[in-house]
Image (tube, rainbow, N blue to C red; front, side, top):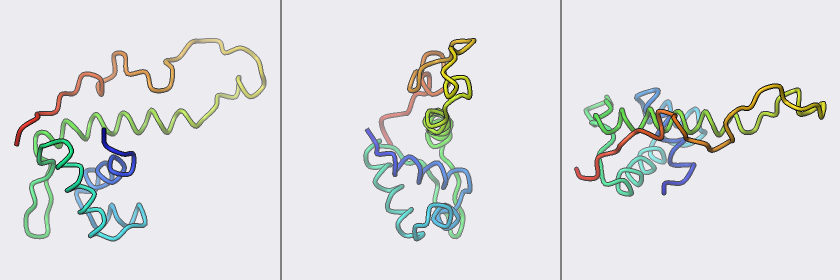
Amino acid sequence: MPSLDLLQGFEAAARHLSFTKAGEELYLTQSAVSRQIKELEDQLGVELFHRRHRALALTEAGQQFYAATAQVLTTLRGCGRRPAARRSRSPPRTRSPRCGSSRGSPASRARIPTSR
């Protein structure tokens, strides 16, 4: 399973279509982001980006993985926020999915090809 650092680096690079801009956002060098992406591709066994001279594009697998990664990171970021109702110790009015629950989410249905 990829580390959170690799997922964050990939998500930023995919969103910006730039290792340089992703690095600026994450306070990393372009080279560090590039190495993270290479490590992630090696772990997954697929190419996530088409690398062209001074340009990036997501592969089909990269597009699928980006959708899943963005959803997972959004869910994780939401887990750090506590609703006002809980802070006041009153019971919540509605039930929401548990943090980490992937039931029915696009991320739970995403499939990543396993060969290059």
